[in-house]
Length: 64
Image (cartoon, rainbow, N blue to C red; front, side, top):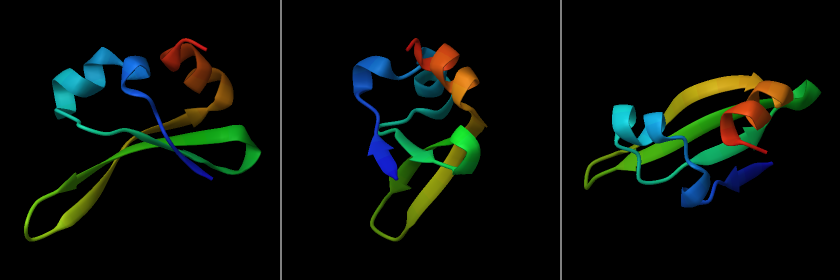
């Protein structure tokens, strides 16, 4: 299942390092999480995987 992550929960380093304007989470098997963003312009749409980690690491990174 994919979920859009609210802006108030975005880690600052993602914004600073990648200049993201959106952030998504995809739930993988065995409670792993994939974090990605989508860049787009007039010519292309690009999905960029930023990180993937276990549920415990995900909770630590996003402060849950």
